[in-house]
Length: 206
Ligand code: PRP
Image (cartoon, rainbow, N blue to C red; front, side, top):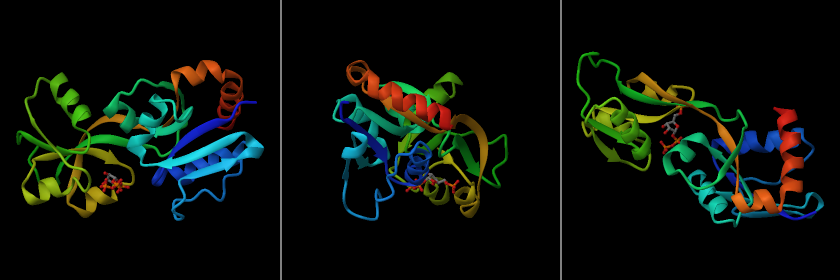
């Protein structure tokens, strides 16, 4: 059987992904972002795992250096890489939302949006025909309204703790988000045997 290279997202998705693989008898317990190791070989399963930043997983898969990847729908919607989305893994569920200061009057207009997701934010407000200025930040976007840089944020919310701690509230939900299994388009055809077998097991497990 061919060797499959699978790109996994570091961070909050990783633990749940490894748990899912465990349910289909693939034991990747030694894969941890605590070590500085980034490539893990499992000859017994015919697999190699690579750990990357979540936003880079679709890039590795699009270029074919990874056959498969586990990436958040947020990253897929933002970057729109040329990859096949095979399956909703229903992991790392959260929501992409517009959030505003807790004490903001609902009639207050929103002009400036701080976000790590400029394309998603732009598309959302364009659809509403609402002109806004998008301010791209790379993290801790909650600082935008706190410091007066922005009127609102577009970001992912999981537990809601971060919003609460920073006196923000959800104004509107844009999309439900979860982790997806993605494939390189060529690998999907050339390695279809191995990929379909894995896909079948994962589908049965979720
Ligand atoms: C994400 C997101 C929020 C937070 C939401 O940030 O951007 O800040 O998690 O999670 P919660 O609703 O469970 O509190 P992340 O931890 O990825 O870090 P970042 O802000 O530096 O991007």
